Image 1: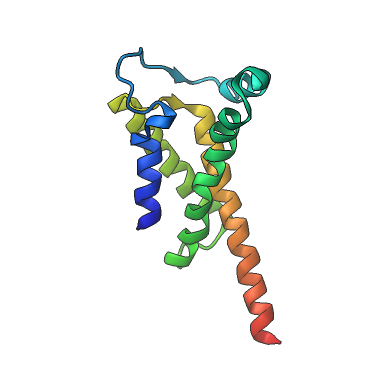
Image 2: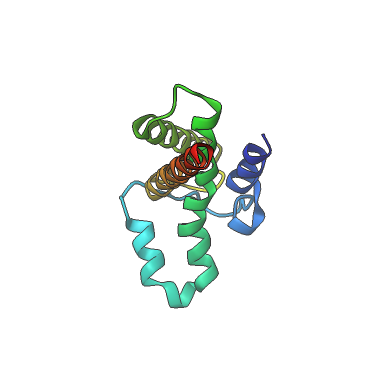
Length: 137
């Protein structure tokens, strides 16, 4: 529950990510890899932390979701269900940002967030395998 509260804060309210600035025109991106490419091309001008927060932060932010989802719901134990639920949660977040004009709708975020959910699931699989090996020893 704490994870969801922290995620919502960073996705909808964190001023450090420009979430509360109502004075500027709303932007959205529907072109895959456009913003990722822009961040990589402008790395030197934007700085390490800006690029890190935008690219790696979107992945890391969804890793706990992919990790805890199969732990909490036994029916969601496979790669495809975790992929689908990660994509759907990310789509819900991005659509909420679009409707309420908080943050920005970005198709690249859908990709990065879903990748984070998958990475979390892979960590879950490694931990589960390790636990089974330890219990059998």
